Structure formats: structure tokens, C-alpha cells
Image (tube, rainbow, N blue to C red; front, side, top):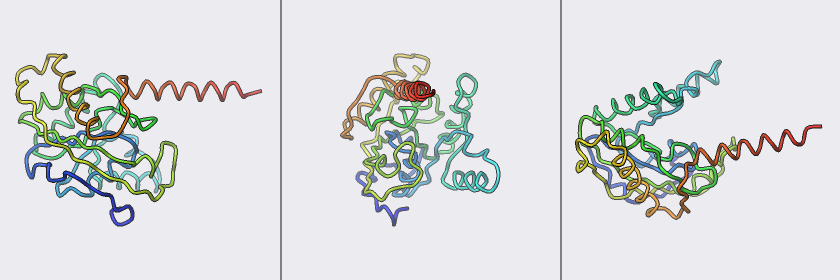
Length: 225
């Protein structure tokens, strides 16, 4: 993939050589998780929905093996206990001093804009058993390679920008404070916005995607005889 798309990179030296790191990135395309590790010496782990690992037949097996080989860890994206299990999966990666890739927006952008971050990333930072370095990452033009709904990648020039490392040890002992969690998340999103050229909307991306899905279903229903 590196040879085919030749992504340009800035700021990769901002990633610490050792210790627990969160790469907090915007999310434009499903291929972000494959491009991001290409220029990083350390292995990057991501949390991916479990359905990628449970397909049947040869295709399902190949998909599962591919995701495992690229550092994907299966999680249940449901709420409640599933969310807590996902948190614990991420914390295990960090406790081992590894690198975890996270998309604070929680889902891909439906329209290439940047949306409000969810506080799960802040919970992970605050509950980790050792200080975590957060490196903001901006993916550039990956949505042009594989837009939502596309099945075949297009040859496009893409890039990655790694920002200055962030630490949040000043909030030690305040993991239960929801205002602290929101403040940490907003600081990370502010850094991402400053690094990117994306328009920002202070709403969750999932609400836009849900509305788009509902509108599409309504249109199909209206066209039925």
C-alpha cells in the first residue's frame, strides 16, 4: 500500500519511541487504520467492530486474518457492558506500553467535516495505569481513495500530519469528573482541528449519519408503488 499510494507524512518524530501512546485521529475513511501505521516504526493497535472477525467461508476467514495482521482488536460496539469491555481492551494495550489508535469522533465523517469528540478517549487516558502520551493525527484526503459506500480504492495522493504530543497528568485523580473528561476530549479535538483544514461542527457525527440513513430509507419507501 505504501508503494502504491506513496503517502506524504509530517511530524512522525513526535511519536515517542517507547511507552504507552494514543494516536488520536480524525476519521475520513475505513482505510485510515491501514494508512496510519505505514510510516510508524512502532506497531499500532486499533479497536475494530467484531463483525469483521466473524465472517463465514473463505472470504470471512481471509478478512479476519487480514484485520488481525494489521493490529485490529475485535470489540462489541454496543452500549453498556460492551462499551466497558471495549475500554478494558484499550487499557490492556496501553498497560503493555504499546500504541493505540483511536478515532475520538467515534465513527467516520459522513461528509469530510470534523465533528464533536466522544469522551471515551478521555476515560481511557484517565484510567490507564501509567501516564499516556496523546499524539494528534490528521489524515488528509483518504476519503478520496475510498469514500463511504465505495468498494474499489481509487489512486489518490494522501497524507498524514502528526501533531505535538499532549499529556494530561495535571488531571490526575479526577477520572470521575465528567467536566474533566469533556475538557480533555475538547482539547484533543481542538488540536486536530488546528492541524486539519476541515470544517468543524459541534455535534456528533453519528447523529448526521443516522439522519442520512433515515432520509435514504424514506426516499426508497416513497418511490415504492
